[in-house]
Length: 79
Image (cartoon, rainbow, N blue to C red):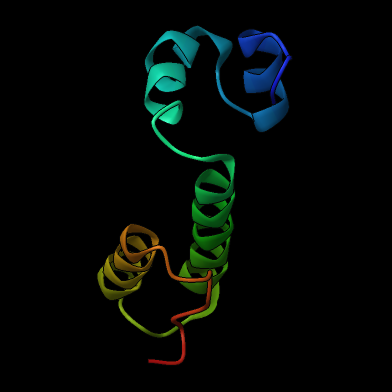
């Protein structure tokens, strides 16, 4: 969150405020939309892992590759 103190932003995002020193510099390497897209993909992955019969390792691999490619978030549970 631009203009928001880092520790407050971390709390809102559900991140331990003590980890801000490690996460904030890494997050600055990405555009806001890239971070949003990655977070949406990980949320979909969470649902896939909980409700799919596809092996979890395959779901994680496909989700990570999608994030790295910059692909729109999607479910991979149908594979």
